[in-house]
Length: 120
Image (cartoon, rainbow, N blue to C red; front, top):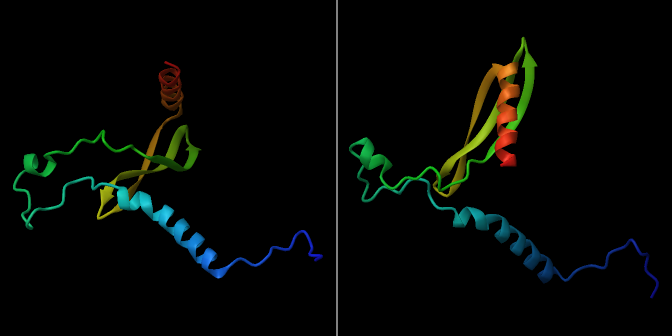
């Protein structure tokens, strides 16, 4: 049977559904496995003070995922728009955008310090 090389043979529809299901499941798995950043309220009781609110919270347990969305220089200052994840709430990651600006000379020294820490 002569078929062109660039033509794909049709797949079995049940295999296509299986592949699609596996792909969706693999994408949803990290969200399903993500633990909540703060404990869920027990019996609807709201924490009465800061000690109760932050009990059991360790900020080092979750990675600080950062992403520089935009960076520009203006009037001798470096400006950045940064997005970072603040935690997982109701099974979904929550992110916050943050704007920061600093003197260009300070930025160069900070970048050098960071490079030195990565080398060590």
